[in-house]
Length: 99
Image 1: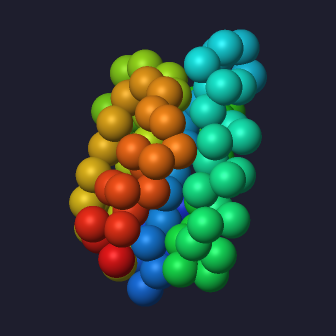
Image 2: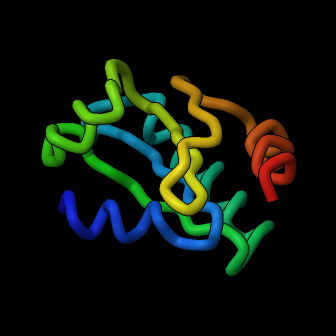
């Protein structure tokens, strides 16, 4: 996962990474919100999900201590991060600020 993760976050598009866990209730709440966010931005935004239990090296590298944690990247640069669930409009507003 590490190499493909680096390739993905180095993209010219914004990439929102959702660090989650299968056992996490708030992560399940966030999933449909992120689907709606993706519909809003289409090809301008990539959203990828990273299971912290299956991808511990990537999670450790970005010091993900709690789930869900969202991190926004562009060209490999970390632009924003937030732990916890945010509503759709808040996420959309943050992404628009970085377009």
